[in-house]
Image (cartoon, rainbow, N blue to C red; front, side, top):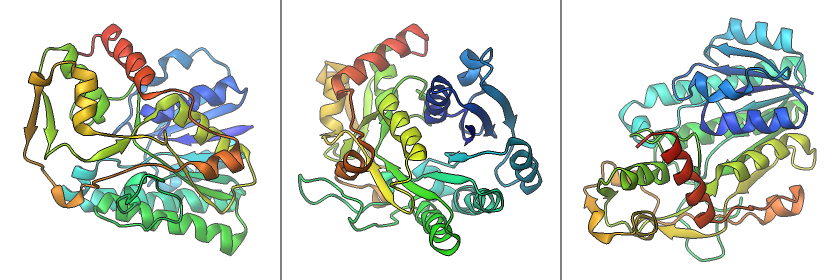
Length: 315
């Protein structure tokens, strides 16, 4: 198939591109490099299946129109977005424009050209998990940050195109994803930052008390879920979760990575009002409809990520 991946130079995006290429598709990438990096795609440069990498903005309607006319896509994996909760609180307008308005512009092109959209949302739209059964897709949502609010608004637009136009769309909500190619600086995820600091002999700083939990999904499991969601008609018009199905406190995560409790420090939370105390995924729907379940344990995922950070000299 001809496939477009917005945000394809990003952390999860490059793994989605890799999987699509391995499956034999023709892949176009659109990315403004605000979160992604061109060198994330370097290893695919010689592959005939990677048709074009376009450096551009999803809010550029002229560029979108040209790209969709040229590409004749069958699926658009829409991963391009502002993804940082703290940034969304400090600058809500940028997040809203990228995540909601930008999604609308991509949707319009998908509608005009009859292209299926797989929309990458987030577990951060959910209210806290109250039990050990995990968060299902019918769990209450809570826009605790402008990031979550913008994603919920975009989700509703995506699903409205399914109901109003019969356009194939699906909303996917992966839980906190980590692994190789994630940034290890302030814009990265907690796992990558902790590993880099541990390898460098630095302290691991935890916001607040560290009792908040996260369900951590290894990036290759996430990419397999994202790509599979595009292949299946069973989930058109649906919202589907993906996660490990196991949560861990940030304190325990730090201990697992640091192997030295003296290196763990607690610092004041920047935006405690947007913290979700417990995140735990119930992925039964993905298992039932897509035959998907995670294959990489947290311990194995951390081992692979540590090795990648060490050999990439990112300490």
